Structure formats: structure tokens, C-alpha cells
Amino acid sequence: MGGNGVGFEALTQARPLPNVAVHATSSGGSVLSASTDQHGAYAFPSLPHDIYRIDEDLPVGLSTWQRNSGQLPTVEVKDGDGNGSGCQVDVLSRPDGQISGTVVDAHGNGLRGFVTIKPADRIEAEAAMQRGGLPGDDTEDGSFSLPQLPPGKYRLIFYAKIRNAVSFAHPFYWPPPNDTSSSPAIDLGFGQHLDHLRFEVSATNDPR
Image (tube, rainbow, N blue to C red):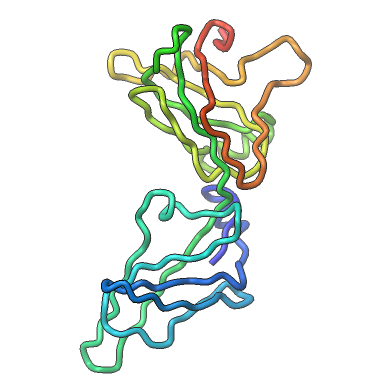
């Protein structure tokens, strides 16, 4: 069990998480618990035949894709010969920073399109693209949520949907460009949730 970063970076920079409680919940609601050791490993020496849901008590600021999506991993322990069976469930946790809100026009109407994010620093943005980019959200009403973001400074990007197709030719940025020497950015702390952000699309945040 471990985690750090997003995508490929999460695999290359993963580190074990010791002393994390892991729970196996049976189909009948019985809960058995174990703890990870210094290497992030855990084990349930003996589980009766059943289907179990696996969950864990992660440190504050970390989460998993399965938990955020409501799809916790399940395993079936079989006992066909009376000696039981074994299986492996690995958990990759990531920083649980999140930015969510709504993309609107000048009149406050939600806009259809695609919302994504990139680091404000050019070098970090290029590195993120090499790792496969950062999360994006396809929205039909303007509402969006970008979960599991590591701490850093970011800019949101919105591509409008025109005739049921996303137009990637004209991106809109938030915070919008300005005339100051430093680039505007959203400063996200470790595990911080920035909700209800209003991303207003207008000529001021169109780079053309």
C-alpha cells in the first residue's frame, strides 16, 4: 500500500504506508481488520469462504480512485478443498486535493464542454504531459470535479462543446491571463478541496 503523485509518477514515486488499518467486510456485514507493516504489506491469515469488500483508513490528505468512485475492491475467498485460498489486493493511494465548480458564461449559464487542468509552471506542465496529463471532466451543464490532485499551482482549461463536439482549437483559462509579471494560478495545498469555483468564460480568459 502506498502512493504519491498521479499516473506514471505514482508508480515511480510510490512509497509504503505503514500502520494503516485495512478492513475486510463480509457479505453479511462482519468486519475483520489488519494493519500494514513497515513495507506497507498486510495480510488476513484466515478468512472464511465469502465475498469481502476491502477498505482502508488512509492518512488525512490521501485517497484512492476506488473510494472516490464508490467502487471499493471486492474479493471472493473460496474454500473448495477445506484449506482455504489466497488472493492479493494492492492499494495505490494518491494526494486527495480537489478542485470543483462550474463553468458559466457572462450571464451565469452553465456551459457544455471539457474541463482539465495543468501546472502553472511550464516545466512541471511539460512533465505532467509526458506522464499522460492530469484529470479532466466532460460536463454537460458546466459543473466539474477534478479529484486526486497533488499540491501545487494550477490553471484550469475549458474547451467548449460546439454541435456535440468539443472544440480544442480555442481554450479558455482560469485564472484568466493578466498584465502582471507573474502568471495567475490556483494554489492548492496537500489534500485541500477547493469547491464552488466559478469559472466564467469571457474574452478576458481567451488567449487569442
